[in-house]
Structures are given as C-alpha cells and as structure tokens.
Image (cartoon, rainbow, N blue to C red):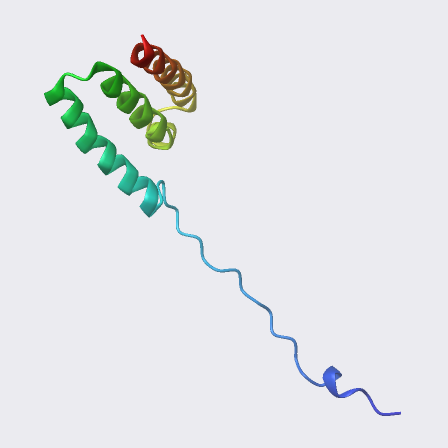
Length: 95
C-alpha cells in the first residue's frame, strides 16, 4: 500500500520569533517626549492643572523603568500616586 504524498514531506518546525526586551514601545516614547514638551509649556504658562496632569502621566509611564531598576513595590506606589494626582488635576481644572 502506498503512502499519501504529504507524508513524505518533512515538517518544518517554526521557530518562535525572538522577542526583544524593550521597556517602552515607540509610541510610548513619543508620547513621553510630547509630555515633556507640554510640561515645559505648562511651567512657562503657569498652568498648574496641566502641569499636575503631565506629571501624573509621566509617573505612570515611567513605572516599568522603576520596577526594573529599583523595586516593584515602589512602582506600585507610583501607580497609585499618579492616579490620585491625575484625578486631583482634573478637579483643579474644573474648579
């Protein structure tokens, strides 16, 4: 009895693509650079709600860096503090 044609073809094993260990993607880097420029504008224009909103955004975005090089618990504290500062900046904006 003859074998089917597809049984003679050796199966190629797909190697998983190599993952690069990146802390931030390109859009995240771009948003942080834009936030720094807006932070400078907020300082020049004395716009306190915008300043606090951008500080909270930058703190939230820099958490992976702190988690990798300092400690995970400090990154969790930064997350909570950045969320509370962000909420406070929205309250400042509308009052």
